[in-house]
Amino acid sequence: MASLEQFYRRERRKILSWIRYRIADPEDAEDLLQESFVSALSEMNAAGEIENIIAYIYAVLRNKVKDWYRKRKSGLYRHSALGEEFSLDSYLPDTAPGPEKEFYRALLLEELSIAIGELPADQKFAFVQNSFEGKTFLELSLETGIAEGTLSARKTYAKEFLIRRLKDMKSLFLENF
Image (cartoon, rainbow, N blue to C red):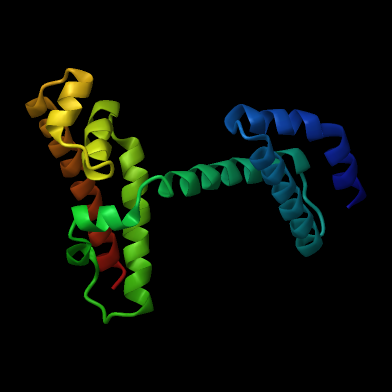
């Protein structure tokens, strides 16, 4: 434990700057730094010793940063709007209503939110503005100068991508039953 404490004091600024390069919010960066060291400390208590502390800390940090982005992305889009846009029940395994079905529904919504972030910028813009902001293609066309048909096609391509992602999730669910 003393070596971890010394390491923390010696490397804190360097590690924090590594996190800040990836996450702009200083409070979130500090939280991730502390969570990583708490995780390392608990691992040392459970296993006794970590061979390479710096490698372990950076591995934990990479995972924490990924989780932070994943959580942040999933909160960007209203889940109710996603549920309306897609008929989610058709992608859920045939299970009785209850906690299991809600779990799978939440998993689908999370996957959809992440997939929206992976869309090309023009498709994402058309999809989000129309589906979440409620703007018509005419309004968007007047704002951007892009033809209504082009915006509609971009949303269609986005929906096709998201539907493929949902189908992949459904096949994953079915493999587990």
